[in-house]
Image (cartoon, rainbow, N blue to C red):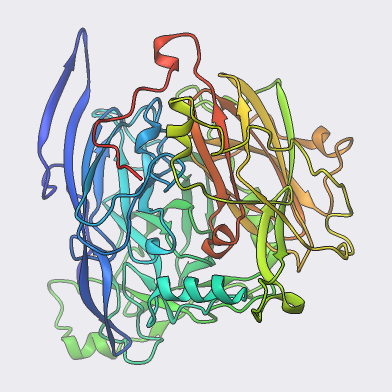
Length: 577
């Protein structure tokens, strides 16, 4: 298996069409087709039929340039309802293409199709796409790579090759059955059987040596590794033995470069790193491994996925395949599973470039301030049922103690057609209704409220949001993803947020800009963004079990006055409920 390079022209299964606007050629239109279908796949000596895209897992790469328009036809050949989310794409005026089920669209039903139609505006870098219904994203995901406009260089050394590395999980069981059982019993879900790199578990698992991702490199070259965490429920540490990585991008935003031996990447995040290979053939091979960073009290997949970094044998050498097999194999040393100090130090190094070409447009003044508690809780057990959650209850999760209930129709449709009554309430609380010692001794009552409530924002509102982890049922790190926006991480810390002292330490000059942020375990994070994108935008924990338990909410951004500040009408083929 050689290095999977990214061809700029030879991309299969789609057509280029020039789009010429008056006075301005914005880009080209790229057509893709994604067929959602079953495929028999064998890993860990276990064969199963699973939901794939075009027969692959991970699915095909979507490749575009900044300014291009994408028309992606998704055809559903399986029994499950399906939607696809283009994770990190701003979707300016095209919220109908964002993808979360019952938020911006009803799902694509069996035998039906939908064309996702959007233009990439002002974005370039590594993102990814994934299913956004139940736990189908466990196998339905793939890279989304946005190249810079023609003639615009990277703000770092041009790499010799570019390699997507996407982390996922392998489940011997059907993940849809796993989450269904967990929601019925009220307990925690069973965990995955392996982690994967580009769909392959690697040699540290039983019956898996042949299913190993190998990255073949040449000495003295620079490779751009596009790292994506598509795992359902685990933040991951990643390292390559005896090699240093230079971080140059996070969530498709360039950052001030810094060197590190180990990367921390939460589900929903992407990180681009430069790998400078050794100047001479090293007479060795090297493991690249990933394993979880764990902060919660629940069970987790305590295993390690490994790929192999292999240097190409010099052409004039007499080295045989047998010689290569006998080369020493070096393993990296990853942080401890619960190494929060490493996690904190790593994230604190991330800073926006904040250059003239790539400015950090941090809102300096704030129109609306919000304080959201984020964490676990419980729901009462149904009558005549035995539940496996805490003290016989059912696990739940909430934002400001509201566990979000998805409606049976699309929130965006209800808003656009003025039919919100009975679908959602516009009164999501700005702060917890009952304050408590968020990271101290938890309250006796752990029950959550349940509802479908949104925050309504006038167009162009500048927002500051502090998200506070709670110690109810144990403190835990939560990777929160906001659809439709990037945001700036202006501050974070441990313990309870202090509204008097902590804002004085906010970084308003060069904070990192992201679409997914890890709320520190037992701590808080402060973000700022400008609500300049009309539509309904989901915000949720990217640990899929927490989303299933209700750790999610939505923002409704109203239209502005100008034509380019209004949500476009829905497409004719928008799926019906």
